[in-house]
Image (cartoon, rainbow, N blue to C red):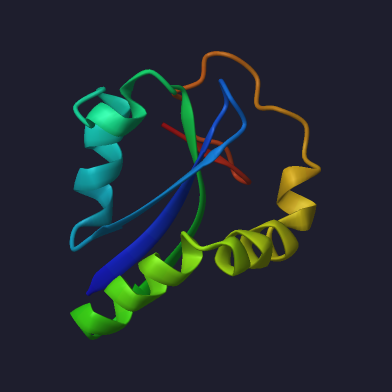
Length: 101
């Protein structure tokens, strides 16, 4: 499976969109600060992900979600999620409704 995922930075309230073949491993890399582009933006929260059978489909979807139209789509799609109160500290806990990494 190929995944496109969106993380929300709890530090700057901005999205990070990425692609991976192993979502759990990639989220752990983000959590540990092993990803340069998100290291300073931690803590992060998994806001959204999609699974695709074909790699090309996932890469096209990632590219779209990084465009202005894709960002608008995400804000609209995640409207209710964005209205949730911030999770309690510590930030690395799992909750029924939110996954903080």
